[in-house]
Length: 262
Image (cartoon, rainbow, N blue to C red):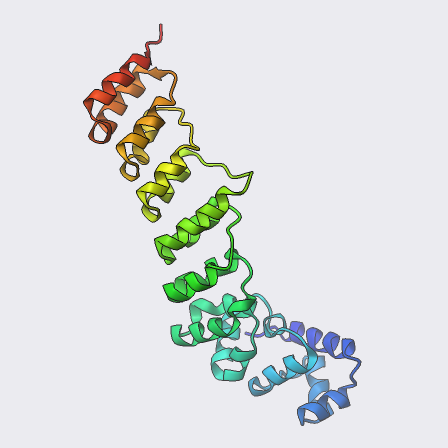
């Protein structure tokens, strides 16, 4: 249900900010001032057909008027009145994205795509719009972290993931570990993964098993060789996990680094 008290409060505050009397607002909407008075007292609610015009006139967001917790009602309002969807902010569209038919949602996002200025918003929309539109919008945005990139990776082509990663690498605060590197594996080329592996310093041999399928043999060897000391247990488990990727000869070379606890 709509929150009547919330709507009445927002309408009154917005009318006062615009320096309009109830009669003046009513005249512009083509209704009686009693109707406006009833809205502001919480005695009644605006008709859905009036919502888009009302929000435009008072310069308020439909999402703000309906209330953040009223996503279902907002979706119904948008579907009942095409103008409401056309005039909705990207914040409102994002809030109700799971409840809108894909065709209408994609059309609304396409019309408002310039309003998407961060990947967090795009991440919320990506599961409900097509890959091409997600990539088009994302091409103009830069992720703040590897985690943000990973959230969108399943919804865009690998080339876009690679471009985002290149942008992240230019950030002096960029950091990577084996866990994040392995998570990126399904979305990046072996060449890109090999380059990124140069930034990683593993702390055990076994942990490399998570990233091994995504690296070339040479890159995996270089990564394993960064280990200065290897425990016997780590080596024995690593031998089983990594031999298919490194080969027995490479594992035998790593055996020289094994330190047996006294």
